[in-house]
Image (cartoon, rainbow, N blue to C red; front, side, top):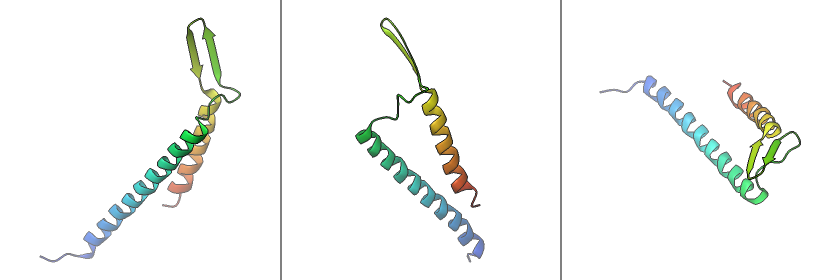
Length: 82
């Protein structure tokens, strides 16, 4: 049974995927460490907080926009290289 270059090429793709997943895991870990030290990025101007008696409704509108812009930039940075 011989193995041709097609198998090696397939392994290269798997290797790149594993490296990408590892880098993503490291980034998430660093973000969680910073989140624990600095606290969540909440209470930005533009976030909606409604308090009516014992009920509090919180909608992080500005935080959602900031997070969306950051994730869009990061994904475009990583996925445009292909």
